[in-house]
Length: 219
Image (cartoon, rainbow, N blue to C red; front, side, top):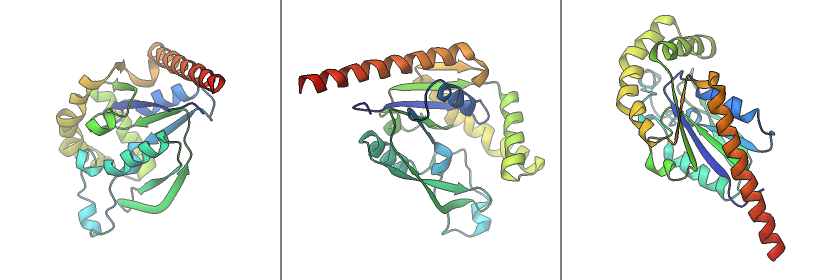
């Protein structure tokens, strides 16, 4: 493993195609090279709240995330230490008792709608990406995901979009585009941008590995 893992932030609105971009990048490298940390796993634990209150959670607001824990985990990975990644239960609207043990890798991709909103996280990143997709495509993708994967009704998805997702996107997500080094229009279908990203990552890894080899020779 190289001296310091490369940290890449992949941000963008809900349903923008962040996951597709991340998967496309990962497919260009071995499983031992890239680790993906999803910001969605780091929603705050709400087990202390009544279920009715948990239902009112605004999952698109920065305060919904436990960034302190996420930052702690990223720093541990940068120091080549394993972490226990939390798991979030969307049906109970709180953190699960289950955790996932994660080992450090050469490349760490941090993926999430507000991954570029916290300056402390941004400072840990080597490359910052914003996936920019039209609102109509994003709402359709979110609707399909929430109904199939999270057991939501169409009415609840639309209500959430109008009352929290859209206003939070305009207030918090869209402004983080200014911090991106690379803006990828249309998400995972932009193969040219993904190829450029993969090439850049390969260059960084190659340079880092050469430096590590040189240090070992000198020692």
